Length: 353
Image 1 (tube, rainbow, N blue to C red):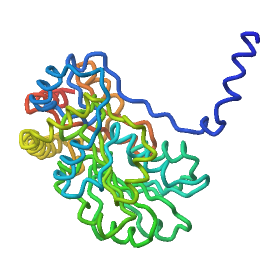
Image 2 (cartoon, rainbow, N blue to C red):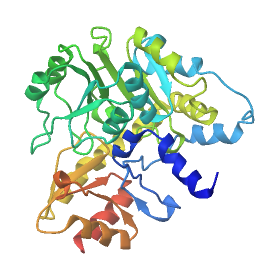
Image 3 (tube, helix red, strand yellow):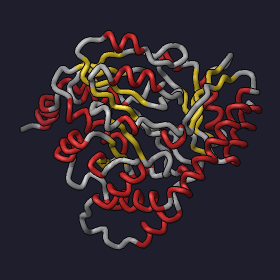
């Protein structure tokens, strides 16, 4: 086989429909410590010191380890039974695992943009048909349109939603659950919101919660997430997931985070206080309109200035924020909440632009 023939072989082997998948370009910084990194909704306070110590002390990397002890801890934390828990390699694997378990070729999945891009990517990768139900100008969900859509298999939602940071009203969630479609509710930021739908798990077997240690516990780089669902669905997910889908470092970090939950939740409370302060201070600038948030970030509408130019100007000062390319969000920037010292630097930089 010639080199040209080899080059032509790969496109023939790869599924043709993968060319239709949208690109997801993650933020990348060689050394996050060299900048004020507020573009990816990470935890500015980092992990518990107990996590750092436990990872330093661990000397058993050569072995495979099970997840039962961490699953039992998680069940106590989430106030459910261990049979309701599936541990995953971050929230992204949780989303894909659920969709792989329930979708058949051509099934309809509801996405409500703007929201987390991985819902659409995972649905398309699992050969579903994605039906967009755009949010209104205030980022509220169009429940009426969803209810009128036929043959829906899965509804993908987040509460609080990313990028606007607002909660899904309980009345809307209950109405959607009554439709009978599987409702996958992403609660990545629920510790910052103080509200969860976990109490509905026993009543609605079509409800699935996706959670992560990336935000509240500061473990974004270790990729630990989990699913809360009915025991029947969890059994199916355990069959589908890889046997050791979460590495031992992630499991050690998750275990120690749960052992030191109060320390981490104090950091969450500090972030919430800073979020409220930043919302007020950024609004005083006159050209930024903050949207009240229940997460660790703020979405801000920019008045009379170019969001991409603001992003570049801050980057020159060593401050990374998010600006968007999509038409729906082209007038907005998103700023993750940092430590008080970081936030003060951001405020001063924005005042001096």
